[in-house]
Image (cartoon, rainbow, N blue to C red; front, side, top):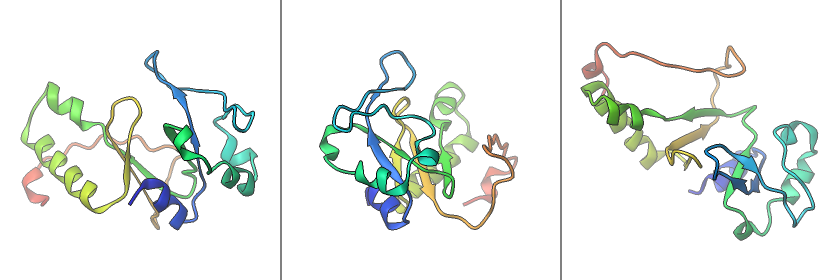
Amino acid sequence: MYIKDYLTSENALWMPLNLDTSKGYKVPIYDNLFDYMPKNNDFINLKPEEIKAKQIKLERYEYGAADCRELKHIDVDIKEQHLLNPNPILDKALEVVEKAKSKYPYFLSSSKNLPHFLFRGDTESLLDRLSTNYKIDNADEYN
């Protein structure tokens, strides 16, 4: 399932956009179709019908943005760590990521080309943004 189809099925807001990534970071590109410059707060400031109206002519766009206020977002960045410092714990983590990719919708990040998973969950976040770095002492216990 494409991530846009998953987001639509979950009634989550999303919109296509183009980014300039040539400088090593993401800069939104002005959208000539809608005479509009995408902003970080679009999902807060625009009405849902305005956002849904932008979900056309997708072939014009290379990237997309999703409203993650009601979705959980897992950003997987362990591949670089594994290349720098291979170990059994990261081997197991990469196996879990590959299994997740075969079962759950995801998209690849624009900068590192690594998976990002979006899903609904019933657990509330304690912070606006959770940055997690877990050390698993007994990786063999997790299958």
